[in-house]
Length: 130
Image (cartoon, rainbow, N blue to C red):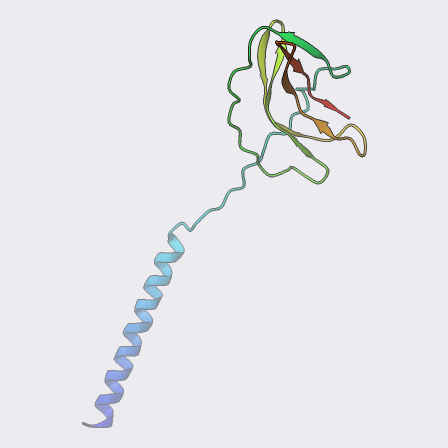
């Protein structure tokens, strides 16, 4: 075997490999990659918690099954997630969706709505900031 032939074969192989790598790189550049999207949770300012101290209401019926909600990423520091819940309003259950909110003052904590049985009666206790 002569050295000129080996050199030509090696050069030809290297050129083919470089061309193949360039072709793969151009295909990858045109192919959309994996896109990661963050789900932002709602920030609700209009849907205020009903005003006043925590109210207790005797209700005739149990609330419907809770609605499944996804908790997203907080919109910024200091926001608190308030999970969705059914509120007794106007003689019926109304869903208040979960959302991020800023506490009304430093150190405030959200006490979620709850439903209890007392003396054979169903009592709804509204959520509130404490």
